[in-house]
Length: 241
Image (cartoon, rainbow, N blue to C red; front, side, top):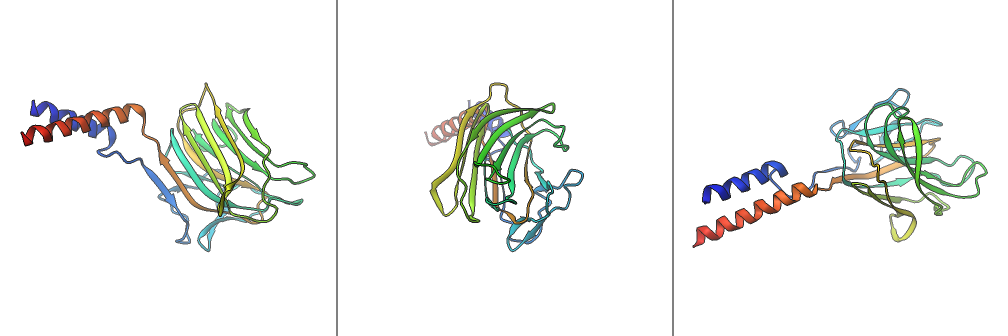
């Protein structure tokens, strides 16, 4: 019986990586360099457009599309990072991120996209847009006409992606109760896992900071983990008797 319990514990640990904690990547950019253990800088004219300055990731090349991909791939995860960029005037920046990206050429690959469009170029409104590209075809899944701050302000992006369910919020970093925009949507034909990428367009002063992505354990893994813990508990009780 003891051998059977030990086997249950061993199998569960093999399937869950030996622990219950989710995988996490984090970069506060305080070392002044782009951490190549975390990021892949890929794409044609997008390479080298980001530079890390004063503890943040800065995008400062005018009318470019700098793009950073994570080396790790994610399916179910919680993403959070801080962003600061011009949100008013003729030359407001556009900003956002992609996730579940399945390739390196963003013009051709399948991916989800979240875009932050401030009021600019005569537009009468701000916009947060969520959708996906499948074989080059865009499908919009949600849009929120929130109001961006009128001056440069640090904002926090947060996204929870689990299966076909996506919850997003954008709020002021120093005032979390001031929610700028949000959406809560399902996509029945959801894309599978992939990398996460940061991007911006028409950047003059765009900054990213405190990037983190944590994996949400799959239900099957959690079930195996629970079985292993129960087996371990039974083994300890048996030993005490």
